Image 1: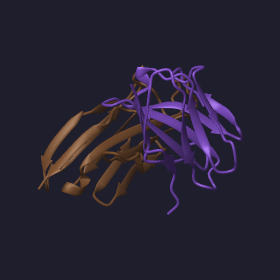
Image 2 (image 1 turned 60 degrees about the horizontal axis):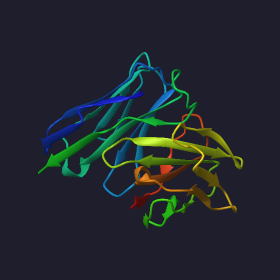
Image 3 (image 1 turned 90 degrees about the vertical axis):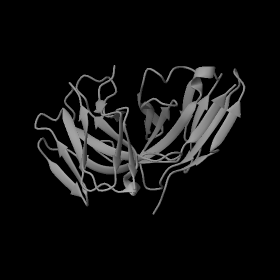
Amino acid sequence: TQLLEQSPQFLSIQEGENLTVYCNSSSVFSSLQWYRQEPGEGPVLLVTVVTGGEVKKLKRLTFQFGDARKDSSLHITAAQPGDTGLYLCAGAGALESNSGYALNFGKGTSLLVTP
Amino acid sequence: EPEVTQTPSHQVTQMGQEVILRCVPISNHLYFYWYRQILGQKVEFLVSFYNNEISEKSEIFDDQFSVERPDGSNFTLKIRSTKLEDSAMYFCASSTWIYNSPLHFGNGTRLTVT
């Protein structure tokens, strides 16, 4: 069962553009985490959101957790080539999941920012 | 900054052989994990480990898999009789706590089963 759906799957934009990627689920999570993964490396945590409606900012990145704690979005302002990578959302503590508090990952959004 | 280290970075093995993937988690972390990522697919949870025993495991983690913390620093994943479909990137991770705690991942071991 695919608990977390991420969209779009691929995104190619030019430097300076804004973008939003989405992470949706029918499950309620105790928290959602966003990671960024570069080729040949492990995922690196960007942010954890815990409270429904929570908004967190990390420089040009803005993360929002849905009020019902089922979905999240990542907005990047004025994207730069260094933002290129695979953005993964991961949910913990899904009520419908049999994996307890283990993190379940979405498939990710592959972002390419060209100069 | 402390990091999770994994060895080897790439392992090639023949079908039916046993492999052991090694990880050194961050020293003050208490929870340890193995995830895998088949090429082009999502990162999948295999197992979590705390206080020298498995705390959770997924359906993927069947009898061919086992984990061990043989000493105070290493955390290993053993695959007893490898199959072609075990080819994947295997990531070790550690965290200070299980609830809403960020995971620190290693750079993975690419396992190729021929």
